[in-house]
Structures are given as structure tokens and as C-alpha cells.
Length: 45
Image (cartoon, rainbow, N blue to C red; front, top):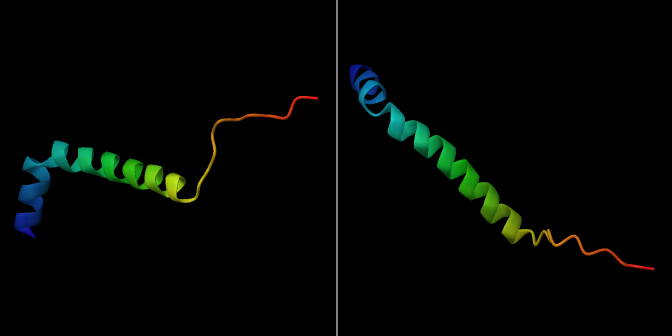
């Protein structure tokens, strides 16, 4: 328990960066895999 507290105290900025970066990357790759098209081209009449 003391080791966990030590790591959280000394490495908190690095942990926060990883907690923000990896979910963002995971979401971006999931969107690419599902083939979502963000070009928004509509039919013109």
C-alpha cells in the first residue's frame, strides 16, 4: 500500500497524461474500424 501511495504522489502528472491519452487513442481507432464517414456529403436536388 505504501508503494502505491509513493507512486501516486511522485508520478501523478505522468499517470494523468496516460489516463487522458489512451482513451482518446482507443476512441479514434474504434471510429476508424467501424468505417464512420465524416465527410458529410449530401445529395443535391
